[in-house]
Image (cartoon, rainbow, N blue to C red; front, side, top):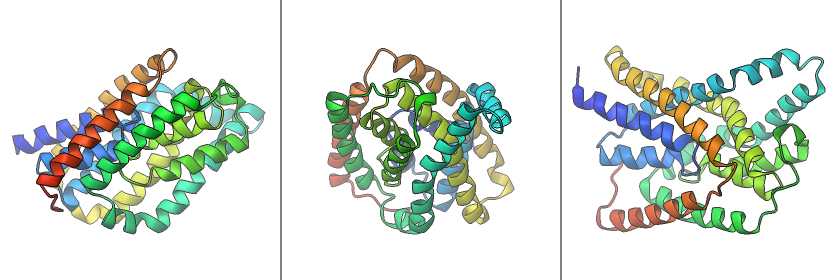
Length: 272
């Protein structure tokens, strides 16, 4: 067993957990940290896709009662049915665009410079939305209309660009459309379930040939780290959004993205 490789898997699993649900871009951080760890190439890309399953299963576990109740009661409960319809509506734009643009995005946009620029621009966008959005029309997820779901779905499509952040795009999109910070955050968690499952299984299907039995320990460590870390991060964020803005994450994005632009100006990135 390669201990160094296991350590890299642990670090990347924790990075995935910390960045998947916070508005700072998990894909962007995985690209950057993978580059610093010299863990790049098709094998690394497949690993990074796989550990997303661990992170999203953390959401499924935390919301397991709500999810089962919604699915089981959708046939006779209008509120549960509306929730599923809103998720389907919000899921569709990014799913359709991702299906057609996946190869282009992977080939041309998966690099640290794109991520750094997106981090900075996304940070500025968060500050502006926090300053000017009037997020008080929809206080809880159950009050969402199909129009709110369309707005969030369009916002999620922007996150196809590495570095934008899926959670950041959906939360900020929801707030810009009039949702409270808590409602937008919670809906972002629910929307992550079909979105990430679909994206992960589709990508794994296309990249399965890059795996071997020797990779099982590495994948297992990364998966468990992403799951356990995800549990902590989701609970933290739910407690945080009730009384705090996303401005600290915005400033983190701007500073980190600026530092990365400076770094990669003097250390050009070479694809693995």
